[in-house]
Amino acid sequence: MLSVFTLSARILLFLPWCIAVGGAIVLSPAHLSSLGFTSILNYISPPSTAIEHFAHWANYGLQHVTIFLGFVITFLWMFPNAGLICLGALMAQFCWAWHDFLPDRTVAIGENERQMVYLLAKNSWLKGITVGLKTVDGRFYVAHSELAAGGSGSELNDSEE
Image (cartoon, rainbow, N blue to C red; front, side, top):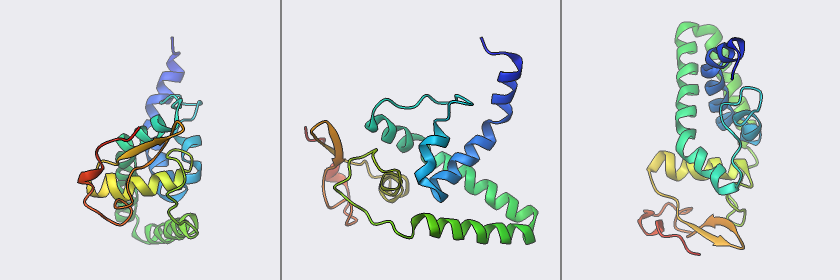
């Protein structure tokens, strides 16, 4: 049973945790798992497999990003001068986190955080395309190259085993 202090801390820190996870998705995807599945607050248990990891962020990642962007917009609206400085710093961090990223279709899903976030943002979150997967030696990969080229994605709903 949770103590009153632990329960209070979990309730009070839930929104800041959501903001931090949304920020990690956008600004530092390499640290996403350590922040999103932290054992200190124990909001979510770490997924046991890479595909469960991918599925979790496919379901809940956009909500975290939306909460983070809502916080940034609110901060910018309430404190315009400080907000612009912070916005500049956030944009710089975004550029630093993503400047050397290139999509690599040979990386299995769930093995590289930036690859996973890019795939989800480009297809699932922004376009609503279901990401088709294929299994190779127990690891999951994107099924077709049309997905990376901006195809319709309608042909990607079947999994290959």
